[in-house]
Amino acid sequence: MNERSSGTNMLSVVVPLSLGQAALWGALYYAFAVILEPMCSELRWSTTAAAAIFSASLLISGLFAVPIGRAADRYGARLFLILGTLLSALALALWSRTSNFIVFSALWGCLGITSAAALQTSNVVFAQHFPTEMKNAVVTSSLVTGLSAAIFVPLCQFLVGREGWRCAVGVLALICVVCAVSFAVVVPRGKGTLKSSLTLKKSDPKALQNSDSLRKILFSARFWGVAIGLACNGAISTSLSVHIVGILNDKRYSSAQISLVVALVGLAQVAVRALLAMKGKSLTTAFWGRVALGLQIVALTALWLCRPGSPATVLVYLFAICNGVVGGLTLVVAALITSELFGTANYGAVQGVLKMVSTFARSAGPVLFAFATLAMRVDGGAISLLVGLAVLSFVAFSAVI
Image 1 (tube, rainbow, N blue to C red):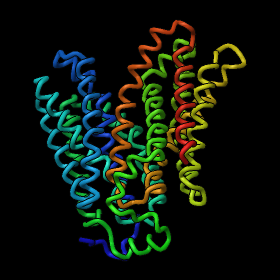
Image 2 (image 1 turned 120 degrees about the vertical axis):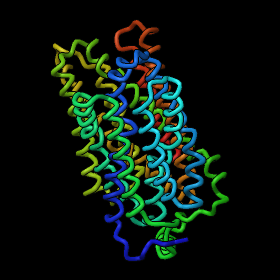
Image 3 (image 1 turned 90 degrees about the vertical axis):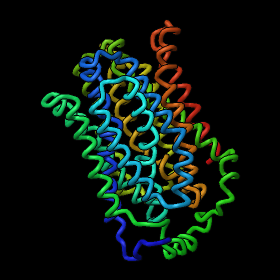
Image 4 (image 1 turned 135 degrees about the vertical axis):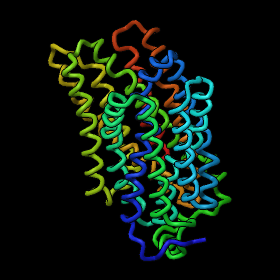
């Protein structure tokens, strides 16, 4: 069934959908870090054990990204987006009432599945209903969703401080219900209009692949070059998210300098996405991917060599700016590169496999970096491994584009 009106404006769908996605990322991802400590303190749970459950939920999300992506390709993304959001709201509501660790673990296992549907199908909506405008849709969406952490971390801190963690989780559940209702109103039914498919076929014949070509895509060297490149990038990204404060503390940077580094990363992400929105139409996603992964090498080399109290101290700010640009670009590249290389017919399934590979890499990255730090007693030795991983990422991606 193809029920989107031919007059539907892209922004009338993309903007409210992106606002909902920003709220869902806040509720299902960023809020956990704020709630972890007060929850474990009240219930006398181990923070390590609770954090491990969250990590396991992310792995489950990666595993279910593939079947959910294939189902969204076949039946349309709208159903999975709404159902995933509603079930996430139910799981959050039950979490806010439980004091049992086994129940908590089961709920986060369920959230791994429901969040895969709620958070990974929005781009499938763009691929199905706005294939000729997908780049604009993804870039616009990234500008909105990029503000999620900046809004929801302080919001959760306020709620936890004022009413306690249970109330905060209850509010997050209510936000998910509101998101589900908004998705039901604004997201078109079906799998796209005949008109949009014909327009895409004329402008880019490769973009409409036969469904039988999915196996060929997933067994191609081009796909796995992209997957390895983005997975290495993901492992680096999460390693830095977890360990950057410790790395800079070990280098003897002050807390004020560390705060400035974190702020510069966020500003650079927003700035590069705004640049993409204004000037990115004439350049391919593959080009931006090469730029991002090349800058990743520059960023990590700067982090490796920076030292406070010497001329090299300013390299830490070069790292911050380049790392922010990398983060801003790779989110957009990961969403668009498969449609640019392989078309949109199997977008959900191909993105699901990419998500699964990336999730495993993201989960393993911080742990492996911690072990490398313990094993390598040379100052900055573990960072040199990240530099090597960045080189592998750039080479794998560039070799197949």
